[in-house]
Length: 305
Image 1: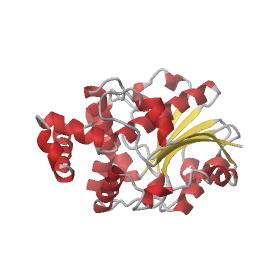
Image 2: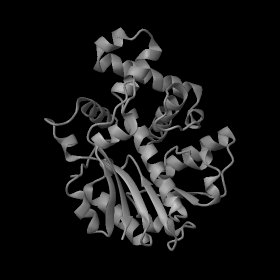
Image 3: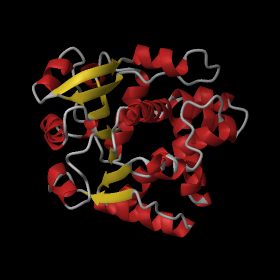
């Protein structure tokens, strides 16, 4: 994985979460620490990207923006997948709270990136162990940035490097202090659509094999319509084009109607399944800005049988 791609990918979601926390209200997801993970020049670079992209995809709206600040807000709210990043993070941490109340003692974040949970919720860390699983290069970058900021690493936070192209989840966790006998909650966000279908279900199967019954996994995915040119929403097409140009194409969509049975085949029961309409009602209803649920994106919470 190229260092430049690692850095940009790791920081992009932090930029989006941080922008929302600083500039917008009411909060969909309040990551009040994310803003601090980026240096001033990184904030400026992402801001310029938003302005330039808006000028390319919608010159008329770009021209109508009264200033740079308005252009950034327009791009983030109407075109960029900010609403998806925020709502899926909120959904996962809401499900985590419920899992902890039910006795879960371990929180595993697959593809953690620049996640800040362990620093935002010190009181919760008294009750659980947090494992961040991510590509070695991404973790190295994050740990370097945390050191630069002088953030003290909580004793209950564990970094588990894993290159999914070279080894599986079980092997990586075997090197850590992960307890296979304890109820665990897995968060797997923004990853499924990048993987081949076989890898998606292989990872989910690994989770079912690793943990006792009652453990759970929350993940998001794109439906198959997102890969149909005649059905895909405009801003989803835009995101697909941006990802392809960055060398990170979307590979896999899932069929919402088939998912319950597919999960049962690997000992996972689909406990909760949110469509874009449900996400809209839960997190975006009544907002007066440009945010609305991202088309084709679904949230799922499955429990190990």
